[in-house]
Image (tube, rainbow, N blue to C red):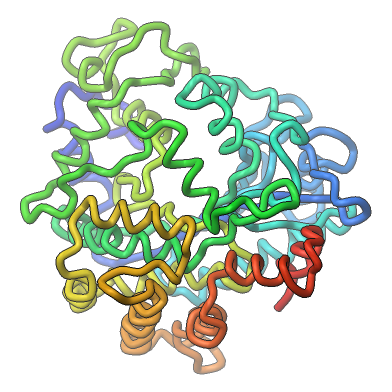
Length: 451
C-alpha cells in the first residue's frame, strides 16, 4: 500500500498535491485493458461465470497450467489473477479483461498481449469457448446472461438507467489505453489532444453494431449505452479545451459527483445517504475524512471517456476489437500525444471544434461512422490524417524490435481498414452481415478469429 493513499484529504488542494507527487517520472509508458465475451462453439450459447466449463473454469486453468496467481477470490470463485505487473480481472458477468503492465516500448506491450491472448485462447479451447472481443456482445440479450453474485455489481445496478447499466455490466466490452504523463501541463495537453480526436477514434474502432443476432441501427451501440445510462457520471469537464484548464478543475469535477461506494470493515458498500466527495472532504462522513484511496475508488464509479488517474490517463473511448487490431490503439495514441508536435498538428486538424462540437460529432458518428460529415468532409479523411501523423511520429522514435521493425508495425491492421477497406470493424461487419453472411450473425466469431 502506498502510504500517501492513506493520508486524509480535506480539500481540492490536497488532491492536487497528491496527484503532483505520485509517480512523477521522466519516462513515458503505455498500458492497455482489453475485454471480451465468450460463447460456446457448439451452439453459440453465452458463457456464464459458474459451471464446469464457464469463465471461472478458464481462470482456474490459467492458475493451474500457466502460472497465474490468485490475488482475489471468494472460496472457489476466482475474481482476479496476477502475474508480474499484469492482471486478469472480470466484469459483471465474469467475462475476462486483461489489465496489462505499463511499458515504455510498444514491442514489450505487444509481446505481453500475444502471450495473454494465446493462453486465454488455449484455455478456452479446453471448454469449447470462442471469444468475441466486440464492443457489444452481438448474439444475445441481457436475459441470456447471468450476473455474478458480487456486491459491487449489485450496487452498480442502482446507478442511472437500470436497463442500460445491466447492459454495461453484462455485455459491453471496451479497449482502453493507459497513457502516462510527467507533470500537470503534460497531463492537460495530452488530455486536450485526446479529447479533440475522441469522435474520430471512436468511429475508427467501432465494433458494436449487432445485438441479439440482428443489426441494432447504430454502428456504435456501446457508446450510446455508456453515455445514456448516467450522464452525470460519464462526462468530461466542459472546460477541458480552455487554455487555463488545470488538474484542480478536473479533480473538482469528480469531487462534485455523489459518492456511491465506500469501504466499511474491509468491504465495499453502498452509501446510505447522498453526499458528494467534496462534502465528504469538507464535513467528514463515516466518522472520518476520505483518503486518496477513497478518491480513487470514487473515480472508478465514473465512466468518462478520459479518466484522470494518478500518473496516467485512461483513454476509454474505443470498442473492444479482435486481437489483430488491439495494438493499434496504444500505437495510435502514443504517436499522437507522446510528442508536442502532434499536439499542435491535432489542434490544427480540428481547428474551430468546440467542446460541444466534439460531443455532437461523436453522437452523429454512432450511426454514420466514418462517413459522418464534418466541415464538408467524411470523418474517414480525418481518421486517415491521424494515422499518418501517428505513423510519422512512431517512425521517428526509432524503437526497433529484433526484426528491425519500428513501432509503426502495430498500425498495419488498422491502416488496412482505414486506407484500403475504408471501413471501421463495425462497418465491415454490417456489410458482411447484409451480404456474404446472409444475416447469420454467428459468423462474426470466425471474423473475430481471422488474421
